[in-house]
Length: 414
Image (cartoon, rainbow, N blue to C red; front, top):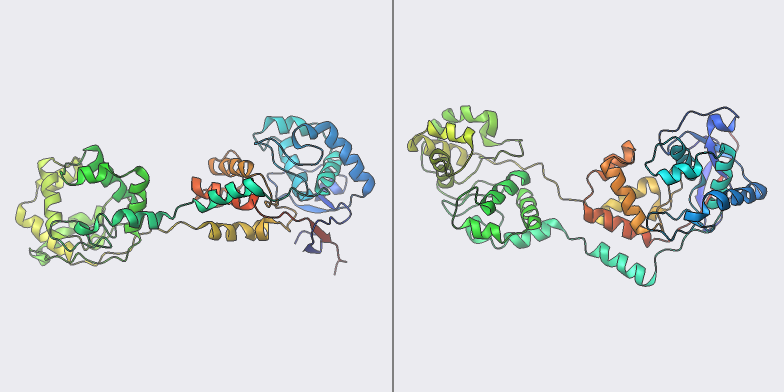
């Protein structure tokens, strides 16, 4: 809880006497250090009708050309700010003043405004009725965008159905000579399949199969197999597993103890089909697979040694990968709402309300955090794992939510 605020309540469109917040040092008449972001330490400052009227004059001269006098944007790159949390508006304008945001037009607009002017214009825009939630055709389009976000695991499963006759229903091979696809890191699966598609790996059957897969298909299928329960191939492992185990010590540096590696670009060998293992090692030895490290290793092995290694690895239990299913839009919203309030209606003066915000503007801001154009350790961490589809779906979701103003109720200090 910010000092001096007391309890915070959400209540329709009401704003409590134009309450705004300013830097603690600022409110005491001292010069405040430049804020690093919108989490500047704040304390309560009260703005009455006269201050809000003065804020309106500031808005008319410095802000209305982009944000309008009603705070409702008509430009794709400009946010709605009507009903936005005044403390957040104040803190953000301070960031723009200090060059902490890349938008030069905003920096120029607020460059010469005093703190008194910033407080008053923040109070003015905060006192306005927020933008309405997206409705009609706009809401329908936003809803369609949210619904269109595909589940990559389900999409991968659909593609994998065409692979089941050779590689097993969940990627656990039941056919000698066919590799198990379970327990492979998505990165390795993607690179290996792409090599078949590009002809870097030679295989008459796999080349046309891989060629028919789009880049999204490759990634989705890789994720699907990586998330399946690992199990050894259901095929016979010819060879001496004991002798193979002694020889496998030399392979552990890359492929991990007992064939379970944590390196994304290296295949797990635990539980792999033995016949496929021998075929792959032979291909490296003959140069049909272009990997200089593996070619050198395979060159030292005869067929019996390859079969012994294959038998050893085939008997090992493969381990789950570190791959995780991506969050759904509902799960992402739950995370965002922790800071930005239920359905994007923030009750924290440091945090912007997201409800009713223009979807295209929200998308632009999320991209800016993802690329580091906007600086915020919290937002960079949150947005770094968002996909393009996640960004669009979140922006569309919050554009459809009904914005609500907030009452900040001061209570006596204990």
